Image 1 (spheres, rainbow, N blue to C red):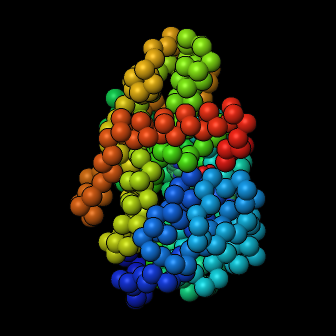
Image 2: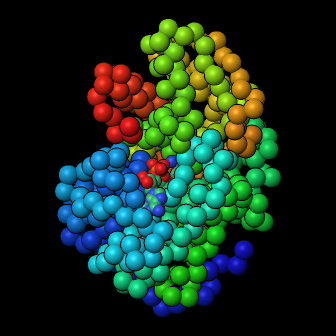
Image 3: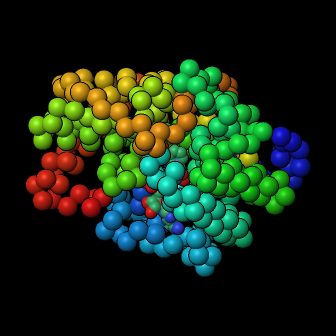
Length: 352
Ligand code: NAD
């Protein structure tokens, strides 16, 4: 792939963001966007605008002091309104979910291209200093992910391109849009390829949840509803790495403010590889139960194996996600269990 840096215009970089600069976070009603809004609020930023198409009562987190706008960003005029006055824009909005969602709703996934296309154009016109795009490990060539004993994916493995149909191709295309806005128009863009982010405040039921939350929920249901088995999608041999949400939001901040990472996709993931079977064992241990396993071989299972090669991020940032999986899963399990009890008690939980 030819480097977009070759055509780099003379744009001013290294801008020191001020605490009263306006930060816009899209997808703020969802998991990562909401957690990022909280992270920046806690860091002392005073002007944060969250945008999401969900009605406000359905946002996973409503962070005090954060302006919340409910708008569909696939409409151009909403994208323009969303970034008015923005110094930094973080695009975390996408129609997405776990394998059960992205294998079944490819049109919805592809249509997220409208969000990024309108948003980056609007951000550039509004004179934003920096623009962040949340890409995915699904952008990687699927041919390299056919074996559970994977070689971890490094950034150059996205090309030659054979991304995950629908969702992955949208991410790969939008990455290129970001790269060219830098190369031709001088908008400073930053791109992270997330690898399975998990943690409290993520989706845990309803069809969009991902493996860590789904497994926690199934174990919790079995434990409290007196069932002695768990249904697992696939044969349990699939391998993945999972990155804890606190590492993810810290990583986004670091990536966005690193000049070496302008228009340069970088992995944001853990390199702790685990099979789905071993993840189930881990959750059983946290829950203190042992369940019979029933494998659903017809369910969506995704690629056979996927891991994050963190050589590049370590080299440029001297940092990589490091929360041990067991620690993050314990926090996640406890949060989902509380949500489960609240829901059972008739309390409204955010995802209802
Ligand atoms: P999420 O579903 O919790 O949040 C995404 C939010 O975007 C949702 O609240 C949704 O309502 C909103 N949205 C969707 N369409 C919109 C539209 N047209 N206008 C405005 N808002 C819209 O998902 P998440 O896990 O927080 O993911 C955030 C970003 O990170 C997404 O771009 C996703 O593709 C990417 N990503 C996430 C993971 C992961 O493991 N969670 C992995 C790879 C990439």
